[in-house]
Image (tube, rainbow, N blue to C red; front, side, top):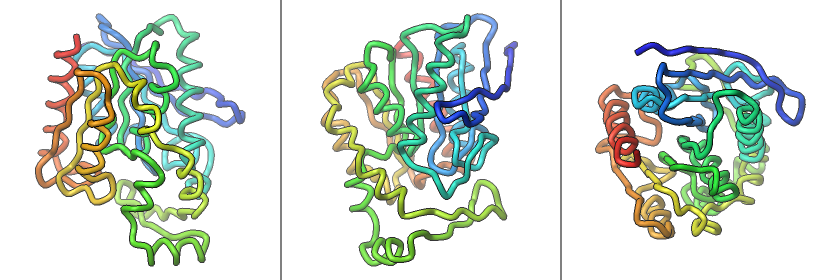
Length: 261
Protein backbone atom coordinates (compact mmCIF):
# COMPACT_ATOMS: atom_id res chain seq x y z
CA UNK A 1 0.00 0.00 0.00
CA UNK A 2 1.37 3.39 -1.03
CA UNK A 3 1.64 5.82 1.88
CA UNK A 4 2.78 9.44 1.85
CA UNK A 5 4.80 10.15 5.00
CA UNK A 6 5.69 13.55 6.45
CA UNK A 7 7.62 14.19 9.67
CA UNK A 8 7.65 17.78 10.84
CA UNK A 9 7.91 20.01 13.88
CA UNK A 10 5.13 22.32 15.02
CA UNK A 11 4.86 24.69 17.99
CA UNK A 12 2.62 24.04 20.97
CA UNK A 13 1.01 26.71 23.16
CA UNK A 14 4.27 27.04 25.12
CA UNK A 15 6.27 27.64 21.93
CA UNK A 16 7.93 24.23 22.30
CA UNK A 17 8.73 22.00 19.35
CA UNK A 18 6.43 19.01 18.94
CA UNK A 19 7.42 16.30 16.44
CA UNK A 20 4.49 15.07 14.35
CA UNK A 21 4.37 12.13 11.95
CA UNK A 22 1.59 12.20 9.33
CA UNK A 23 0.93 9.13 7.17
CA UNK A 24 -1.58 9.39 4.32
CA UNK A 25 -2.77 6.33 2.37
CA UNK A 26 -3.60 6.60 -1.33
CA UNK A 27 -7.36 6.43 -0.76
CA UNK A 28 -8.14 7.77 2.73
CA UNK A 29 -11.26 6.49 4.49
CA UNK A 30 -10.97 8.95 7.38
CA UNK A 31 -8.60 10.53 9.88
CA UNK A 32 -7.16 9.24 13.16
CA UNK A 33 -4.83 10.49 15.88
CA UNK A 34 -2.68 8.06 17.88
CA UNK A 35 -1.17 8.98 21.27
CA UNK A 36 1.56 7.21 23.24
CA UNK A 37 1.63 6.72 26.99
CA UNK A 38 3.84 8.13 29.75
CA UNK A 39 7.48 8.16 28.71
CA UNK A 40 6.55 6.72 25.32
CA UNK A 41 7.18 7.95 21.81
CA UNK A 42 5.50 7.72 18.42
CA UNK A 43 7.58 4.71 17.28
CA UNK A 44 7.02 2.65 20.45
CA UNK A 45 5.64 -0.81 19.70
CA UNK A 46 2.18 -0.24 21.20
CA UNK A 47 1.77 3.08 19.36
CA UNK A 48 3.20 1.84 16.07
CA UNK A 49 0.87 -1.18 16.15
CA UNK A 50 -2.17 1.05 16.59
CA UNK A 51 -1.00 3.18 13.68
CA UNK A 52 -0.44 0.13 11.49
CA UNK A 53 -3.99 -1.08 12.08
CA UNK A 54 -5.37 2.35 11.17
CA UNK A 55 -3.23 2.70 8.05
CA UNK A 56 -4.10 -0.80 6.88
CA UNK A 57 -7.74 0.30 7.10
CA UNK A 58 -6.95 3.42 5.03
CA UNK A 59 -7.07 6.07 7.74
CA UNK A 60 -4.84 9.12 7.57
CA UNK A 61 -2.84 8.58 10.75
CA UNK A 62 -1.23 11.28 12.90
CA UNK A 63 1.27 10.27 15.58
CA UNK A 64 3.32 12.65 17.68
CA UNK A 65 5.79 12.83 20.55
CA UNK A 66 4.42 14.86 23.42
CA UNK A 67 6.79 17.27 25.09
CA UNK A 68 8.51 15.96 28.24
CA UNK A 69 8.89 12.40 26.99
CA UNK A 70 11.57 10.27 25.29
CA UNK A 71 10.83 11.22 21.70
CA UNK A 72 11.96 14.05 19.42
CA UNK A 73 9.89 16.87 20.95
CA UNK A 74 11.18 19.47 23.40
CA UNK A 75 11.15 19.13 27.17
CA UNK A 76 12.39 16.75 29.82
CA UNK A 77 10.69 13.61 31.17
CA UNK A 78 11.06 14.86 34.73
CA UNK A 79 8.51 17.59 33.93
CA UNK A 80 5.90 15.24 32.46
CA UNK A 81 2.28 15.65 33.61
CA UNK A 82 -1.11 14.59 32.36
CA UNK A 83 -1.83 18.28 31.81
CA UNK A 84 1.11 18.78 29.45
CA UNK A 85 0.30 15.56 27.55
CA UNK A 86 -3.33 16.57 27.14
CA UNK A 87 -2.48 20.12 26.05
CA UNK A 88 -0.13 18.78 23.39
CA UNK A 89 -2.94 16.56 22.06
CA UNK A 90 -5.20 19.60 21.76
CA UNK A 91 -2.45 21.60 20.07
CA UNK A 92 -1.70 18.86 17.52
CA UNK A 93 -5.39 18.55 16.63
CA UNK A 94 -5.72 22.34 16.36
CA UNK A 95 -2.74 22.36 14.00
CA UNK A 96 -4.19 19.48 11.98
CA UNK A 97 -7.48 21.37 11.58
CA UNK A 98 -5.62 23.87 9.35
CA UNK A 99 -4.27 21.18 6.98
CA UNK A 100 -5.92 20.27 3.69
CA UNK A 101 -6.22 16.58 4.67
CA UNK A 102 -8.14 17.29 7.90
CA UNK A 103 -11.66 15.95 8.30
CA UNK A 104 -14.27 15.41 10.98
CA UNK A 105 -15.39 13.34 12.69
CA UNK A 106 -12.12 11.54 13.38
CA UNK A 107 -10.88 8.59 15.43
CA UNK A 108 -8.83 8.94 18.61
CA UNK A 109 -6.60 6.10 19.78
CA UNK A 110 -4.27 6.09 22.80
CA UNK A 111 -2.49 3.79 25.22
CA UNK A 112 -2.21 4.24 29.02
CA UNK A 113 -1.72 7.97 29.76
CA UNK A 114 -2.48 8.57 26.10
CA UNK A 115 -5.70 6.63 26.67
CA UNK A 116 -6.96 8.99 29.36
CA UNK A 117 -5.95 12.03 27.27
CA UNK A 118 -7.88 10.93 24.17
CA UNK A 119 -10.88 10.07 26.35
CA UNK A 120 -10.77 13.50 28.01
CA UNK A 121 -10.67 15.12 24.57
CA UNK A 122 -13.61 13.03 23.38
CA UNK A 123 -15.60 14.09 26.46
CA UNK A 124 -14.82 17.76 25.77
CA UNK A 125 -15.47 17.63 22.00
CA UNK A 126 -17.77 14.63 21.40
CA UNK A 127 -19.16 16.12 18.18
CA UNK A 128 -15.70 15.82 16.58
CA UNK A 129 -15.18 12.14 17.39
CA UNK A 130 -16.18 9.24 15.16
CA UNK A 131 -14.88 6.58 17.56
CA UNK A 132 -12.56 6.21 20.53
CA UNK A 133 -10.00 3.53 21.39
CA UNK A 134 -8.59 3.85 24.92
CA UNK A 135 -6.18 0.97 25.46
CA UNK A 136 -4.91 -0.06 28.92
CA UNK A 137 -6.17 3.39 29.79
CA UNK A 138 -5.54 5.30 32.95
CA UNK A 139 -9.04 6.11 34.24
CA UNK A 140 -8.42 8.52 37.10
CA UNK A 141 -5.76 9.80 39.44
CA UNK A 142 -7.70 8.33 42.33
CA UNK A 143 -7.63 4.81 40.86
CA UNK A 144 -3.97 5.19 39.92
CA UNK A 145 -3.13 6.00 43.54
CA UNK A 146 -5.17 3.01 44.70
CA UNK A 147 -3.11 0.69 42.46
CA UNK A 148 0.16 1.71 44.12
CA UNK A 149 1.72 0.46 47.35
CA UNK A 150 1.06 3.12 50.06
CA UNK A 151 4.58 2.72 51.44
CA UNK A 152 6.09 3.27 48.01
CA UNK A 153 3.92 6.35 47.48
CA UNK A 154 4.97 7.79 50.85
CA UNK A 155 8.65 7.27 50.08
CA UNK A 156 8.24 8.75 46.61
CA UNK A 157 6.45 11.82 47.95
CA UNK A 158 9.08 12.36 50.63
CA UNK A 159 11.95 12.07 48.14
CA UNK A 160 10.18 14.24 45.55
CA UNK A 161 11.09 11.91 42.69
CA UNK A 162 12.06 8.36 41.82
CA UNK A 163 14.28 6.85 39.16
CA UNK A 164 13.27 4.37 36.46
CA UNK A 165 15.30 2.79 33.66
CA UNK A 166 13.45 2.83 30.35
CA UNK A 167 12.68 -0.59 28.87
CA UNK A 168 11.74 0.92 25.50
CA UNK A 169 15.05 2.81 25.27
CA UNK A 170 17.67 0.78 27.18
CA UNK A 171 20.23 2.92 28.95
CA UNK A 172 17.88 5.90 29.30
CA UNK A 173 17.19 6.84 32.92
CA UNK A 174 13.89 8.55 33.76
CA UNK A 175 13.59 10.90 36.72
CA UNK A 176 9.91 10.66 37.69
CA UNK A 177 8.79 13.60 39.83
CA UNK A 178 6.07 13.36 42.46
CA UNK A 179 4.48 16.38 40.73
CA UNK A 180 3.07 13.95 38.17
CA UNK A 181 1.00 12.20 40.83
CA UNK A 182 -0.30 15.47 42.23
CA UNK A 183 -1.33 16.63 38.76
CA UNK A 184 -3.15 13.46 37.72
CA UNK A 185 -5.52 13.74 40.70
CA UNK A 186 -7.27 16.48 38.71
CA UNK A 187 -8.46 13.97 36.10
CA UNK A 188 -11.18 11.33 36.09
CA UNK A 189 -12.84 10.18 32.86
CA UNK A 190 -15.68 8.54 34.81
CA UNK A 191 -17.04 11.97 35.75
CA UNK A 192 -18.09 12.82 32.19
CA UNK A 193 -18.25 9.34 30.70
CA UNK A 194 -21.87 10.04 29.69
CA UNK A 195 -20.41 12.16 26.86
CA UNK A 196 -18.76 9.10 25.30
CA UNK A 197 -21.70 8.08 23.15
CA UNK A 198 -19.52 7.21 20.14
CA UNK A 199 -18.24 3.65 19.56
CA UNK A 200 -15.61 2.90 22.22
CA UNK A 201 -12.96 0.16 22.21
CA UNK A 202 -11.17 -0.89 25.41
CA UNK A 203 -8.28 -3.37 25.51
CA UNK A 204 -6.33 -4.45 28.58
CA UNK A 205 -3.65 -7.01 29.32
CA UNK A 206 -4.71 -9.85 31.61
CA UNK A 207 -1.67 -9.19 33.83
CA UNK A 208 -1.95 -5.40 33.91
CA UNK A 209 -1.37 -4.40 37.55
CA UNK A 210 -1.94 -0.64 37.24
CA UNK A 211 -4.83 -0.23 34.79
CA UNK A 212 -6.50 -3.45 35.83
CA UNK A 213 -9.27 -5.40 34.17
CA UNK A 214 -11.55 -4.43 37.06
CA UNK A 215 -10.89 -0.75 36.33
CA UNK A 216 -11.62 -1.24 32.64
CA UNK A 217 -14.87 -3.02 33.50
CA UNK A 218 -15.79 -0.06 35.70
CA UNK A 219 -15.26 2.31 32.80
CA UNK A 220 -17.22 0.03 30.47
CA UNK A 221 -20.16 0.14 32.88
CA UNK A 222 -20.11 3.95 32.82
CA UNK A 223 -20.23 4.19 29.02
CA UNK A 224 -23.74 5.10 27.84
CA UNK A 225 -23.76 3.76 24.30
CA UNK A 226 -24.34 0.24 23.06
CA UNK A 227 -21.36 0.37 20.66
CA UNK A 228 -18.78 -0.43 23.32
CA UNK A 229 -16.50 -3.42 23.78
CA UNK A 230 -13.74 -4.64 26.07
CA UNK A 231 -11.08 -7.15 25.07
CA UNK A 232 -8.53 -8.88 27.32
CA UNK A 233 -5.15 -9.96 25.93
CA UNK A 234 -4.21 -13.19 27.71
CA UNK A 235 -0.94 -13.16 29.67
CA UNK A 236 -0.18 -9.58 28.58
CA UNK A 237 1.15 -6.88 30.95
CA UNK A 238 0.37 -3.18 30.84
CA UNK A 239 2.68 -2.44 27.91
CA UNK A 240 2.54 -4.96 25.08
CA UNK A 241 6.00 -5.85 23.77
CA UNK A 242 5.80 -9.49 22.76
CA UNK A 243 4.95 -9.98 19.06
CA UNK A 244 1.95 -12.21 19.88
CA UNK A 245 0.42 -9.54 22.15
CA UNK A 246 1.05 -6.79 19.64
CA UNK A 247 -0.44 -8.87 16.84
CA UNK A 248 -3.53 -9.65 18.91
CA UNK A 249 -4.03 -5.95 19.64
CA UNK A 250 -3.59 -5.21 15.92
CA UNK A 251 -6.27 -7.76 15.00
CA UNK A 252 -8.70 -6.44 17.63
CA UNK A 253 -8.28 -2.85 16.45
CA UNK A 254 -8.52 -3.81 12.79
CA UNK A 255 -11.74 -5.77 13.28
CA UNK A 256 -13.18 -2.92 15.36
CA UNK A 257 -12.41 -0.43 12.59
CA UNK A 258 -14.22 -2.62 10.09
CA UNK A 259 -17.24 -2.89 12.41
CA UNK A 260 -17.61 0.88 12.83
CA UNK A 261 -17.20 1.61 9.16
